[in-house]
Length: 89
Figure 1 (cartoon, rainbow, N blue to C red):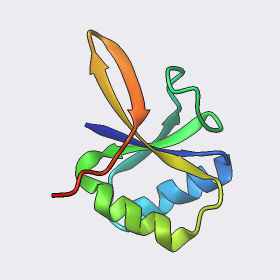
Figure 2 (cartoon, rainbow, N blue to C red):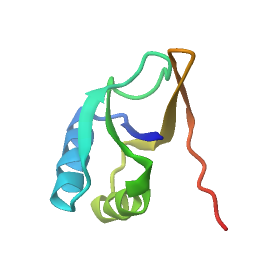
Figure 3 (cartoon, rainbow, N blue to C red):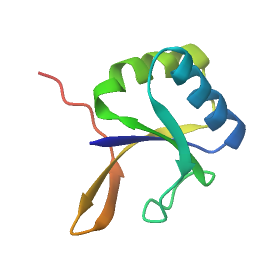
Figure 4 (tube, one colour):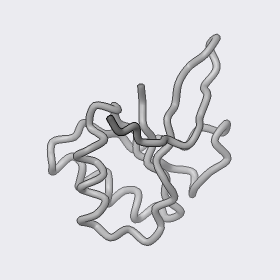
């Protein structure tokens, strides 16, 4: 599953992507999917396996424009975007 980190600020989005890279998370800055109707037009995309590290990097940066994590899945060839909720065991 793919996770999107959504921000209201392009500058903070770009900074977060750079910090993820610095901490070993393979992430890309991409256009926010139109299905999401969220954010500044950009978001940071990464694999869900890196969510713990991504959350830690987010806390270190103190990003005021952070809007939330969203999961992106493809169903029948269409992107489905919804808020990501952590699952605890």
